[in-house]
Length: 323
Image (cartoon, rainbow, N blue to C red; front, side, top):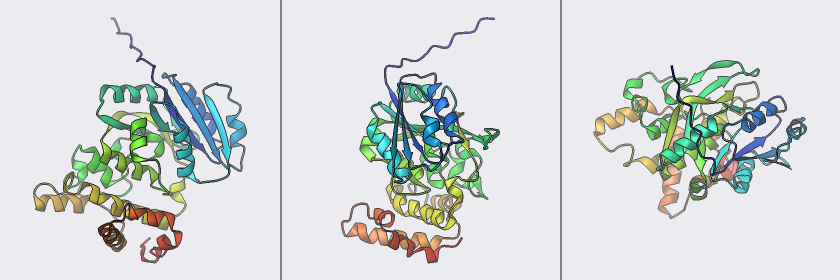
């Protein structure tokens, strides 16, 4: 029996990997190794330590590889740290790896090959291998097909019944993590970077990418997403719920009439009702959308950023949040 030898793809285009490092001395070695051992070797690895208080930087500095750049800074937050790295990047392709996650060895090669083969796609993600603190496999998240963040009682009536990337992204952040996006530099230069969201900057970025152009998912688990006791998502539920409502207030109007609400009114309304779960915070969404619609009518551009830049304004709405 003869087996066809796999043909390696051309590696003339560089990919830049940005690791925002913060207090992950337990995991950063595995993260860095997973980048350096990629089958796609034409890469640069930009590690920016965001004021870690443990030995994360010392662990990172043990690696001797000319492709690595390490920068330290006082704590500025994840979105600022990621954006600093992306601004420094010299690659034609860009990606982020959170310092507690890791890549499968062929991830970058397969993602770049997909983007080259599908020139109309600007961002690609993949299925995810969910792992624990000791890198033990807990399961495979297959995009929007399983492991939803909340129950979906009538999947067959919701966006999940479709194979539509954008609709399913509106339903929930099935991409799950900043680590699960590989995109073109052109996309980054066109839509900008991560915004000042603590829990949902990846979701917000992906929705802006989906408005800009086509996004896609590779149906293979090409990265490890680590679940542990200090994951950001577990730290402040009220803030997280605010950001979920903010996402819908900021983005729904981008797609209404183009991707949603464009066919049979009864079916469209039912599909939306079965897809969007605000965790009993409909009032908060109504407040945010009304405010943003009024601001846009007055000619304000991106008024949603007011709630990200003004803590007092944002937290004035927390009393209306149902936890």
